[in-house]
Length: 100
Image 1 (cartoon, rainbow, N blue to C red):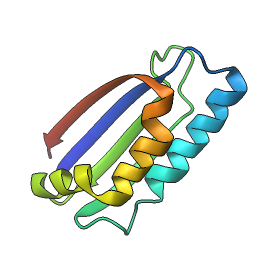
Image 2 (image 1 turned 90 degrees about the horizontal axis):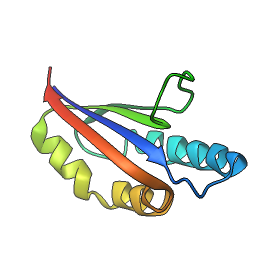
Image 3 (image 1 turned 30 degrees about the vertical axis):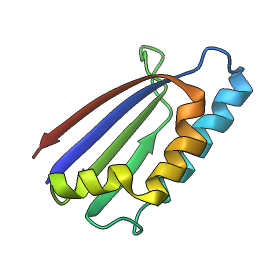
Image 4 (image 1 turned 135 degrees about the vertical axis):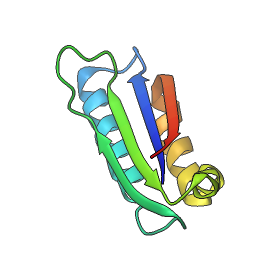
């Protein structure tokens, strides 16, 4: 199994209310990919970090294998969410992919 962990910081230009809306949109969009992408086993988005956090949103996804992760990266449903709900509103992205 392959894990795909992403941490994002939202853009500084967003107001507090806009950040809440963006977080909800990212969560809805990415978790909505469940059942749509071959090899995607589980997908969860966390948006309520503790005050000690320095990231705003975390994606925790599991795939059958690395090839399934590669397919997810270019799948049209994922690209639509990334381009419409994530990339326009984030300033920093960190990724860790690993085998479990």
